Length: 113
Image (cartoon, rainbow, N blue to C red; front, top):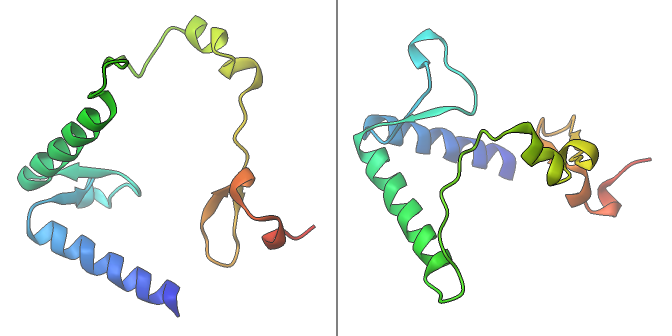
């Protein structure tokens, strides 16, 4: 029952956000792309406020400096960090709720052999 209520609440939130110009599904006029959102005028302001608040909360210390690095990096960076040789993040699809979870975050009592 709570899953149905949550879905209903999410649909209401998305509808309100679209009416108010906060967010829109990316490429919505062409069918949309799941999990991709474009920010409208109010959404841009909200996103920037949250981003600035988070950044200040993380860097307003004497022993921390901010860094805004590129997302795309030379492959040698990923090799040096160990991501290429040993990074894995196994995911599990739940057939019941149709959601995906990180394997290491699922409690043992919820895993069937």
